[in-house]
Length: 75
Image (cartoon, rainbow, N blue to C red; front, top):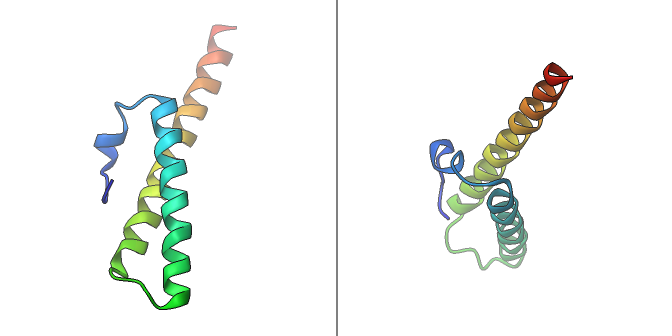
């Protein structure tokens, strides 16, 4: 899951996005561990993972806000 674009994330379901987020956080932890032990092969991957996590969290926030605004309009 290298450097996903937002347009690739949008069609995914909430569960798929949550799974992707969990995988990326696990990878981020492993990358930090590799950096601390001096075994990192691709330092640029840290930046890619961090940005993809931010994209996912932004998308989740947008969906939550959309659901919240949609719920108040229906009531």
